[in-house]
Length: 368
Image 1 (cartoon, helix red, strand yellow):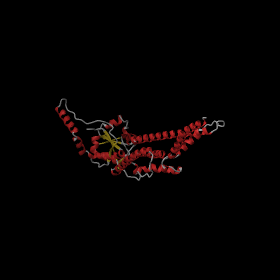
Image 2 (cartoon, rainbow, N blue to C red):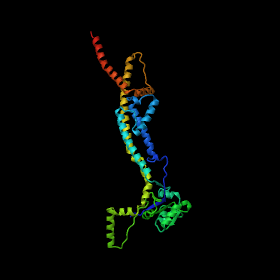
Image 3 (spheres, rainbow, N blue to C red):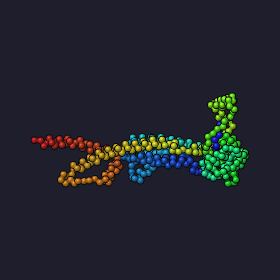
């Protein structure tokens, strides 16, 4: 039987606030989720802007579209259709992530609102040590010397308690009225004490010592083998746990006290989903911009060649394209519709194919 030291404190029921709907997620989880809504909305806008009329228009309208599309995916109510292959792939993956987040949020909020929540100022042995409040100790317990020698707690903070009534009175009075802020005792004694308290008190934190109770017999005693075998059999078939749950079920108060923190969802549960979604968006953007740069290289190369051919050899000045001008041309090119770009490149390809035939015709005409 485990007999490590635990902390017992008085608890009170949590009163729900108008902001209870924020409790299912931790603040880092809320912040990252909001950032990903905006990030995915911006990625879809970039992928759709060149070929989808619903993602085009004045800058103000486009900004509103990004925000509206980003957060409307939370309820699967976005009215804009995606037409590009990359945009559809990103949106499908993001909707899967949103589905999991919505389901987890609903389950967590339901758990928080339906299970009785208990809270205390003391959350474990660490907060108890730093509080400098009086601590109750069972008379004759080894915990007295352990707290002084191992945890460096001042002896003046310790209060000796003898009976369960002393436990109850000291915890109800509290540190400001001559009582104690918490009691440190071995787990079996605490479970027996909590069995009759009806969740007025509760265990907080984890056991901070690992020890156990055993039976001592004379050397070579036959009872040692028989009793050890019987205890082992009870432990293996679960009977020992059933006996514990039947007679010491007051520990349910401690379980309820931990429900709030366990029900809150943090990034540890979802970072894999966000990582996959972020990688997919990054790959889609890389493919998109690679294709845009390839189209722009063909577009700008053909344009420069055309300017060179139109200029007279004697009057052709040495021109140098400024970086700002080149960047502006790139932005203008990216802002063009996909249909226009394809039409321009198609015409240029046709012109290039016709030029060799025209040259050959001119050469044939010049022959005598």
